[in-house]
Image (cartoon, rainbow, N blue to C red; front, side, top):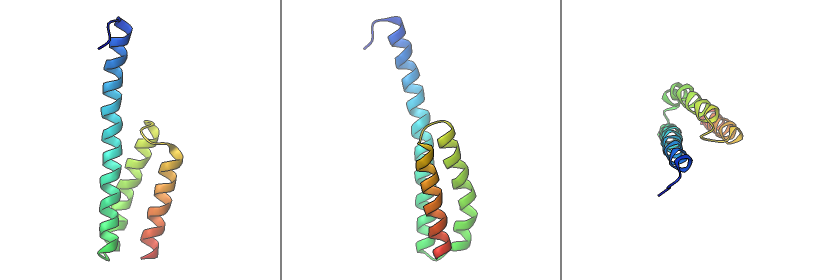
Length: 86
């Protein structure tokens, strides 16, 4: 455990940031998984409706730097390609 005051503050900040980052990452993971299951079940209409929510979550993750912007762009591209392919 930190002893110095600034180290204690840093620990508090890191805990808060970690929880926010995990929230955004888990949200993205859940939505992507849901889209993939819908596509595999041949429910492309529902997958297309869910795509906008996923885009929003990915953009938010990139904005808050929970995920790298290029990673989010790649995920968006691959999901769109997957839905259009099916």
